[in-house]
Amino acid sequence: MWGKKETITEQRVRQSERITLALPIKISGTNLFGDVFLCDGWTEVISQNGARIRLAQNLAPHQEITILCLETGKEAVARVVGRLNSKSRENAYGIMLLNPEAHPWGIDFPPRGDSAVAVGRIVLECLACHSRELAYLDGFELEVLESNESLSRFCRRCTDTTIWRKSFEPLPVPQASPESAPQNGVERRREVRREVRTVACIRSREFGEELVKVRNVSRSGLCFEGRNAYEKDWRIEVAIPYSSGGGNIFLPARIARVQLVPAGAITLFGVEYVRQQA
Image (cartoon, rainbow, N blue to C red; front, side, top):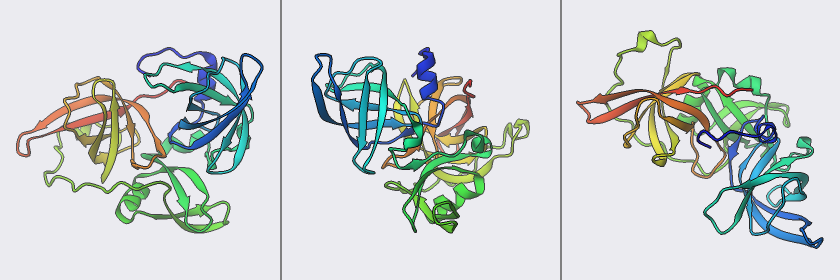
């Protein structure tokens, strides 16, 4: 994940947004000895084109398997991309769906072009028909979602405007510190940042995962309060908004600015998203 060079096949699997989500699955196929197997497993990360899964069974590269998502009851045929390094007793594999239109995860993925104006990414659920969709939120929508725990948006299945909420267990938003964010350097920003109080998850090689208070957001980055001593130019991953139940989308980013606020004894970190090559 940190600086690892990907194969062409792995890049194809990553063409859509990746959602951190644990879904129970059953995997069936034929092992290296020609015997048919059926075993339980779960997803760790899903996308429109594939997933990272974990199971006890050993799989071989390029092997075809059938995935049954127990939550949706949908099946899909997939090919094993390869085994992933893991300290767990279970095996972790990257898989690619042979037919992405099978939608085994029960989540609709919008076109990637819709993310151009997004400041937040999360899986939402329509309260009317319970369909799930990866939603790209602008600053106003993110603020409404975090304030009301729901928002109004058009549902393609209902063909009407309905109420949507986070599809998985919501995370309470911690109270923001009273100190206002320093204004130094604001004029140098190419984009205006919107003041939004929400929770994000910062993932780094040095500190693992940390839940942080967000001060402001824009299409190109955000500002957060952190307890850990991140350093400028460190590579991180960011999920905003964050739900403790899953359905989070982590984006690659870097620490662009570090600023200590003596009055509140806190440290503010400016984050800039890192564009991924197509």
